[in-house]
Image 1 (tube, rainbow, N blue to C red):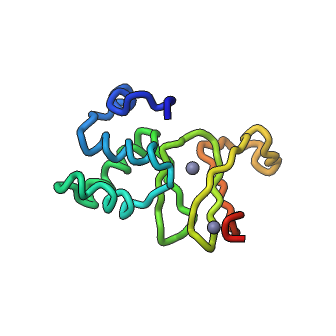
Image 2 (cartoon, rainbow, N blue to C red):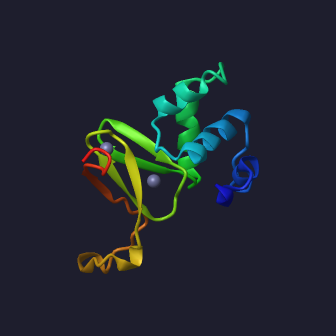
Image 3 (cartoon, helix red, strand yellow):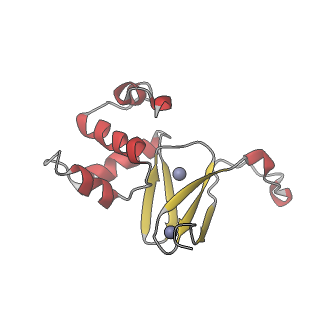
Length: 135
Ligand SMILES: [Zn+2]
Ligand SMILES: [Zn+2]
């Protein structure tokens, strides 16, 4: 968690006005690291912030994505998840419990001869299977 420092400062230096709701949404992402959906964040925070709406959560995450501080994870067509860890890493989704696990990924080690003339801006590696807990 240290690498994010104080959330309000982390947002400010990236040009995001640190409103209370934005701080709470980002704080949720780095506290739980559970790759939540908009719905999950909304349900977890609305008790504490009764004025919160799903639209606000969505717009906040969209802003964070535009500013490059969250990753959008689309392992499933019908579910979008978010991650405040924007370092290079892949995601493994367990088809039994639905949990998403991070795994380290070294982009330099990816051997992609067919793309040698292409400039890669983003990489998303998604794997699905069964986690050790469910095996
Ligand atoms: Zn599992
Ligand atoms: Zn992740």
